[in-house]
Image (cartoon, rainbow, N blue to C red):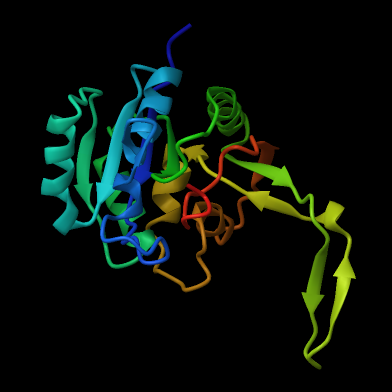
Length: 217
């Protein structure tokens, strides 16, 4: 059986503002190397033949190449310049994807602990249904704010926390990102959903956090 041609677009546009550091969060060193390198390695570990595209702000690209030299980082990947919003950064990454890519995933550069099992579930489900995202259950009580300034508890079993990679059939994703940008596009699934395509949920892994604050480190 022929191998499915997979592409992953890793979006790393962090400025480090919420982290309170001068170094953008994707370049902070954890366990001996920058976070972004761990993230790239996770996808290479899952599928060494996968096309890996990393989207970075223009002003960070030279710094990244310096880091690759410093840490002898040799996992093959392509660099694409980001845009003014995540939407445009993802679009730039998709445009770089190989023409014969069948499935394209989008992943946050600061989620280095996604498991290869979760990556596999996302790509397998996307191959079947066209659109798959990893989610985890809500373990804490959730309250909804009301217009009168109050709040009330809502059933947490009705909600899921969304992670990445979010994986889609390549033609579907390309068509979705041909749409005009909207402020309510909070992730890739919302962009695809705006065209009326349903999103399949697969089980994520709780360690797959988005490293955003010092507490996350």
